[in-house]
Image (cartoon, rainbow, N blue to C red):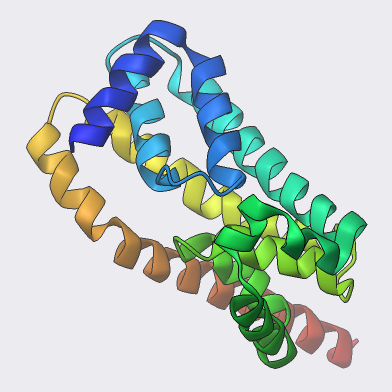
Length: 204
């Protein structure tokens, strides 16, 4: 929770722009936990330093801009990016090969669920761009859907727990498993809607 308190202090003094910059740094692979950053944004809203709904929009924008930047760099520079020192440290050749293999096996599912896998997001998004097997629109839709699930979850968790730090700490620890459940329910809902529409079409 020490990191959370430090981020809350920084964000409370600098507002939305500090949250946005922090999320862009998270997207670039800087070792700042994105989930804690989002919670801190929610906490300052709960303490009255920001509007929580505006914060949700700002954080979704920050997350998506960071993700799109990594995808775009991968798409533009391809495997040449692996020679850049910061990228080489983040994703050495062996890890890049593993990511390629995962894309072969899981495809779209990997891009969607990467948002729920701390430590893998940046590597997945760079690989998605570098392999050039994924269109920008498909990447943006899958990543955007995942962000619409995960980002508000963390922001509103911070908002409701702003004055209940012990409760908040408990739910931060539970948060990742709760997100998996929420993501699974959304996926089931989408599949059920697809099946329902398909059944209606076959009857008409």
